[in-house]
Length: 346
Ligand code: SAH
Image 1 (tube, rainbow, N blue to C red):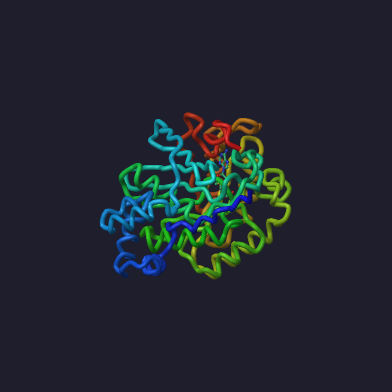
Image 2 (image 1 turned 90 degrees about the vertical axis):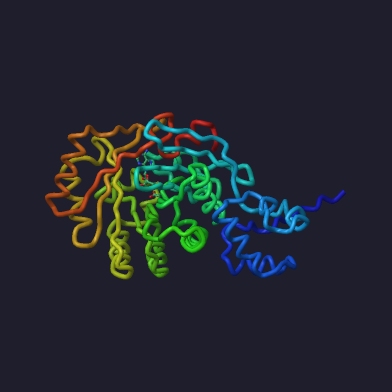
């Protein structure tokens, strides 16, 4: 007997008000149902059309299996600092990590853009696990709605610093940013996109003239060390990467943030701070120092506090704007891609 494969329709999450209106009309429903669906999708966070109690009962029951695009929370770990790590299960069974970071004034969500990551950075738990696939735009949007619903509070900030390299999945990430901005109502200025730098892609991103903050993972002041830490950097010489960054600042008017994971005795010497200042000086930027979060299978250590301070002082003395970001959620294997790895998901 021949097996017929069922092609699932594309999920509703991620569609704009006009697309949803078009869709309800195709289903023989009145135009105003589009607005209702938009509201229930993005404000109430429905998981099935059946939940939309303002829709005619027969119609919503007949549509109960139409995919919305929501994930299932498989695990939820709360760290002592209130950071919450979620393991989310997608429609095909893949697992991703999302982190909710509450503070007194805001809720930030650290979102994943891919299942796994192909960049293989030597100090990164996700990089060690390999790459599975890109996330669809609805799978990115779902992460924000999931945290919002779980915490009963609106998400104010988004950082694309979870699993994956967002610029390798640019079209879906851009579609998710549009929807999160226009349909969910989160300001683009409250979003940060972090990239390791893919040749030509920062330039491509600049053409979209977004208000999103771009963060570039530098991690080393010279090409040889950068290649050791980030193998893909061999395709992107540091001067070329920095030129693309400079052009980005010029064409968007937005300053760039450079991330620098501090690894004891590897990239934390004062001379390296001076070299870094030479590299990033002269254009609108900001250096974000991230003291390394130790992971299994990587032989790196976090520098002592006074080493971090000295590194920062060198940058400050060179008039480079600098801050230190201690990753939260370190307890319970909950930092940076470790929860998924520790649960054996590959
Ligand atoms: N692929 C993108 C975004 C994901 S990672 C990028 O590389 O920028 C977000 C940030 O966390 C990156 O700067 C990454 O280098 C950093 N990071 C990864 N593992 C880390 C660890 N164990 N400790 C500290 N920072 C880490």
